[in-house]
Length: 47
Image (cartoon, rainbow, N blue to C red):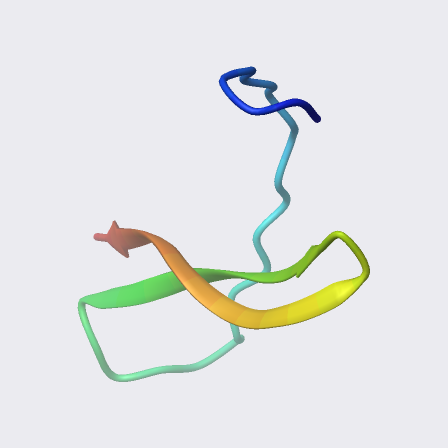
């Protein structure tokens, strides 16, 4: 998309069945203009 423009998208998150923590990072595996940028932390889920 052109610079200065914003867009929204839906992201689905899948948590493991068992874990022993009170929070988890939510990551997005990002490709930009055909190049992989890798996993980027976008949010943290708390419960």
